[in-house]
Length: 548
Image (cartoon, rainbow, N blue to C red; front, side, top):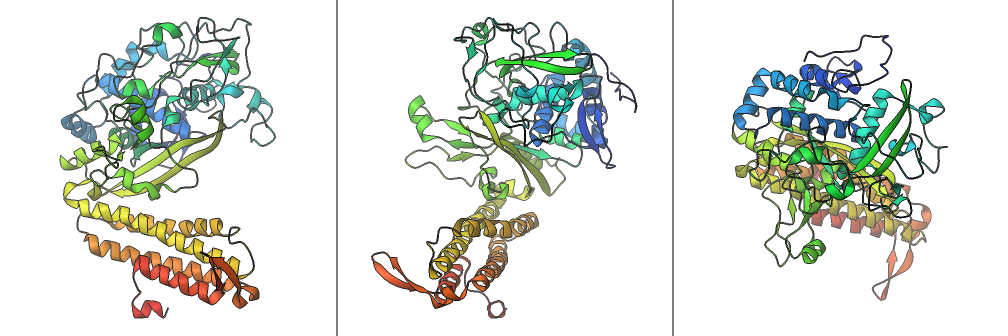
């Protein structure tokens, strides 16, 4: 299937086929932006820098869709030789085109079997909502604080509706949904919460290459496992399973493709001309996240003691991103072979993303010719019983491939140790701020949290830069010594700023109760305690550094 790009100035079609009509927002390596079709995404992947949608979560959901298509087009386990050939000669466009031709009609946004939808979805009352349930950045309870207004909040172009449709299947909030006819779970006309969309459970992590082609290849993992069932790992456009909730209740993933395209919701779009003006969103296939690490490759995992006790078997849950925590602070969860076991068990406390193991395999096979991999973290922080979006996570870090090698385990351990030292240093800055506030007559609570945030912000760029310098030639002890020097300088400078900002009252000090005794706290004493804390964590500085 030849790619088709809509010429500038062409009016949008009254129907949209995702294979041949443009709807995916991208940035080319040249710096220009545009929208392309699925066919274009594969044919021009080598000249596209990245998918660049309204939200990073939308880009992530679209990437997962393209990975699902590539897996199914190949229709076999991905081998190192497959990967080597595609890296050298480009994506297998002949089999991709043939696959897209076979299922062309299933990528129509409207029709008898509309893409990612149920054509006859309805409620007993015949209700139809506006487009707001689809749009993650349009708060339903407060539309004063949004960039959308007028037509932008009342209707969507067909291309934009396609993107929000895919985003909703991946990241839709939990909460009460429309009660669909035929869903025996509906009570009183309502569909009660079954959780967020599948990707909403994840702390999404993927490798980002220099081009979309590299990104697709780096993340083309999952079906290298003998646990995958290729015949059962079907996307919804191939799936012959009935659409009723009762008949689909036993549906379970058997590989990454179904998870990439999991139908968490039953959705129907309503259009008037070239605009989507309404929708219905009902509950779809319920899926819990326990022990999906075998098939879901784009998230890290954590051992769950409560879930293990409940299920009476070792259970892992997705390792979600934390609000306000930079991606690099969890680097240990990305590195194979350095984790600990959970107390009183033989189970690993954490499992890196499966994509990390795949990248390691590519490195060991000698087909990965880059020293650094850019890892992107994407996810949603939900609030109020997962019924609203509080925050969108979008972060990245350059990870040395050397840290994935068995012979460099000691270096990987030091990368994690550097984070622990950063945590200790941030606590020292926090205590300094507390003591300075107490010395001035305060409680010590007002400024401590802000001081810790400033410490992590100050360490952010230095850690990322230090991490990117690690290579197979790096000596682990020299590397951690270098980090201690860098971190100490940064935190010492921050401490100097806090001390300089302390007022006259803090220099005079005051008596403060501490562990059943009264202790005089002054700026000078607080600074001395801070220096000793830095010495304990990072070691005493060289004489020239101490005098600086």
